[in-house]
Amino acid sequence: MTAAADVVLSVRGATKVYPGTQALKGVDFDVRAGAVNVLVGENGAGKSTLMKLIAGVEQPTEGRILIGGREVTLAGTADAARHGIGIVFQELNLFPNLTIAENIFIGREKTRGGIDIDARAQRMEARRLLKRLDHTNDPDTVVADLRIGEQQIVEIAKVLAQDARILIMDEPTSALSAAEVDILFRVIGELKAQGVAIVYISHRLEELVRIGDFITVLRDGRITGSRPMAEVDVPWIVRAMIGSASKDFAKTVHHAFGPEILRIDDMTLPRKGGGFAVDHVSLSLKAGEIVGIYGLMGAGRSELFDCVMGRMRQAKGRVTLDGRELAERSVHGRIKRGIALIPEDRKAEGLVQILSVAENMTMSSLSRFTRGRIHLDVAREKRSVADFVRKLAVKVASLDAPVASLSGGNQQKIVIGKALMTGPKVLLMDEPSRGIDIGAKAEVFRVMRELAAQGLGILFVTSDLEEVMELSDRIVVMSNGRITGEMSGAEASEEKVVELSFLGHRTASRTAGNHRRELHS
Image 1: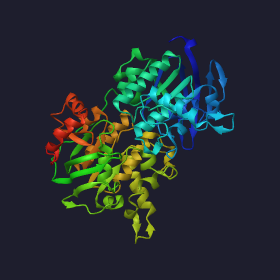
Image 2 (image 1 turned 135 degrees about the horizontal axis):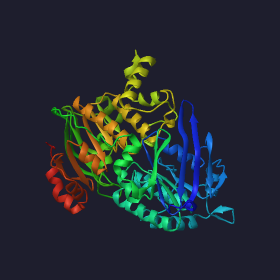
Image 3 (image 1 turned 135 degrees about the vertical axis):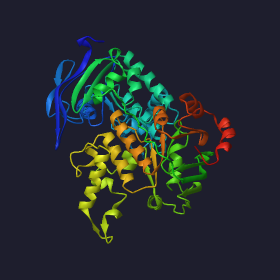
Image 4 (image 1 turned 180 degrees about the vertical axis):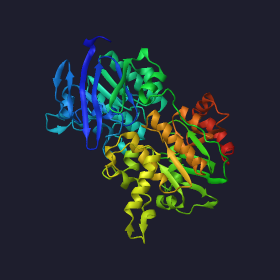
């Protein structure tokens, strides 16, 4: 695999300049056939920009792209597809009102005689692709009815349907469960055996070591390392990414907890088709405390947050904030009372892509910057936004830049900043590090610890075991809509947390009654 003849695509001297920033600075990058070519770097390092050049989404300001040793011009995604290049984007690009089968074949519909769409043939092929990915939903299922992890599987199926010879995967596992990740890795193994060249981008270093054959590291638009994966370890990757061997993952700020700030009593949310997505959940949170909720996909974690925020009208149960039961049933009302939510899907629920960084960050807190409820104090708004941008270490050329121009991780930081600008007493964070690199994680988690030390109560959901172990003062485990276990961070072990997350419904039923009470240290 190390021979030059195995290189099927090369990028030489690639430079990409945007107004106010240079995303790539003379990058050389090789993609080898029948191998997983890992590309890693912090948010804003230029990974997604490089992939957009290869996929024909963007064109280089300077530099060349060669396929099979011949220079090519990729003027668009159609050009890239003709050269056998497919990409699974980090941000989902699906039509929520269309079915799974319709999304898989959008723009490449199967037809009868070139006249009308052969829906039956599309469903059959979609069913075959879904079976290959161990995906059980019917091809006629509307995408809007799928969980985000299931939507990610559809995105992968859409690219597999194109029989790409060069397949780019940008954070393909960011919304997948552990079981779904194993399925994806099996499919990647099959594709490698067929000679497909795979470019794999991920912030999960353990994934890269597990699946990669070659690794290239980007930092600030430049290549800082490129080697066979067998020759590197995690400390080498971290040093190449951020110039330091230390992860600085989550430095604890020791402080005393305050009184109970949030209490959830007997929360339920009916599930479509019967049963409960949230099944009689009770827990509490103290001021200054960080509680992590761990569980597999479908455990009911995100749904619990939706109930607390008033997003689910059919939910039943009591939410008490700072000693007062919340009567407000709207999201706006609960934000005003002091609860803020950072959603899992930043693109669909956290940001308005066409608005600027500043406009996005103050969207939920504009009343703080108005005079007489009429005039907006733009100067004070900009100063406040600049302060949060600095605290969160957001890489942005200008506060007036459209938020869509930022990297995925920097967009996530903007969502976090927007929530913090409402001045919450309780912060709900749903997968706060999704799509964030190792350096950005350290920055975000440092901010979380500092906010907790100032008295903010933080309840966060994660599917990252290392995160929940390192960051949580206490850990709550959910399975099948119920709490199956709770423990302090000090007494938790990875084995215990994982075991509780796999508890079946019958076991959960026996244990849940023991957890319909206040969590305590």
